[in-house]
Amino acid sequence: MSAAPVLVSHALCPYVQRAAIVLAEKGVAFERRDIDLAHKPAWFLRLSPTGRTPMLLVDGEALFESAAICEYLDETALPRLHPADALRRAKHRAWMEFGSGLLDLIAAFYRAADDDALKRRAQEIRARIARLEAELGDGPYFDGAFGLVDAVFGPVFRCFDLFATLGDFGFFAATPKVRAWRRALAARPSVRQAAHPGYEALLRAFIQRQGGALAQRLQGQAATPA
Image 1: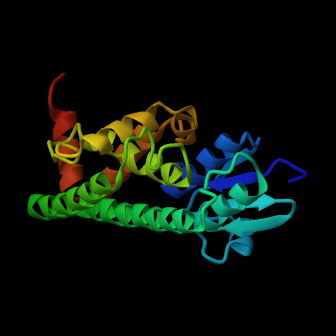
Image 2: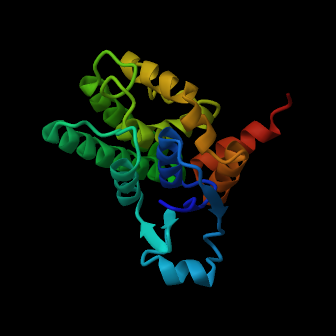
Image 3: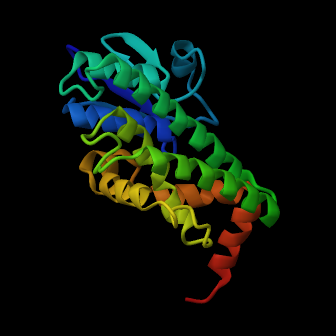
């Protein structure tokens, strides 16, 4: 990379945070350019076939999809974050996809229309987290040293901070290894700095716009005297 890459981002997108974490871990200086996905600029739509963030602009080329971006960064800048062994590397890629699947469940949790639906979505999330617990070793990260799987799960775990203020969903009650992993990720500078400075307020506003059970809990929280 002969010039500083540009990370085209949206303030709430966890996939953007993945790319930002990898860039930070590699020590690559970059420009972060936020766009409004409700009013996508024409230049962005010309460059992105999917119309989604993140997009990485590198020496006049546009890379889209977070997995491709992270793989490119891992192949072109040290330190390597994927295992050298091909089998372990393939397993890590599979667990990165597992993380994307967990984000899909979290999106359904955001949109749950009532408390019954919210409980069902929470149960599905707990089952996924329990599967992670069975996979983890001694830590502190997914496979010992920090890797691309950790770059995926740092943003995934971040949203649970807000969920904890809205109810006791027991997401991590029976998963001590995942709790320790989550703490280690939250303490890592690259993970902390990947989020937009106003992330929590933006997430609250996003949930309110969904108009579901979580939005009702937020409204009740706002109405409760301090």
